[in-house]
Length: 199
Image 1 (tube, rainbow, N blue to C red):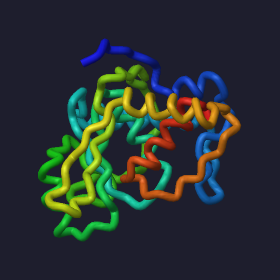
Image 2 (image 1 turned 135 degrees about the vertical axis):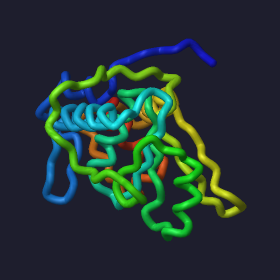
Image 3 (image 1 turned 180 degrees about the vertical axis):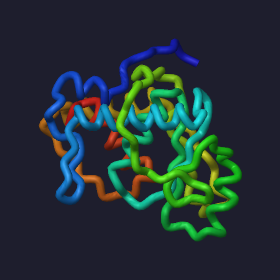
């Protein structure tokens, strides 16, 4: 283990730097960084109300929609891990995965899940993340056997953003087109890059 490094959540940092700049375009909807920070804070508040604490897992299943980002960064602010589950799996395929996750809370299209809609924020938990904390758990495809749950840290995602910046720059004017499903590492890493750059 390396030395623990704590930094402000990249969404909160981009919100401070440029609150009115766009964070996500989705259909005809535009969400600014200021709004994104409030939505992530609302997600953290709701998860905290539901008893989520550091080290817990939060399972989520849905087709692509912006709320995934708010729940992801909201869970991270509590030290919890978001586990997005393939929305294309059958109910029979999902059951053993959900059992393995042992989530404190389930969201979206899962058994006994909470809806993805968020309530207005009243008291935001701190927006500080530790580079060593696990923020995402992703299942492998399982093409060669039982799917494995791979855990990734905030530091993993930040390192990816920094490596991309060396080749492609880190301008806030960048626009990344997200075409992968939000249970895939490629699009989650893209979402982190945008937050780090304010893109």
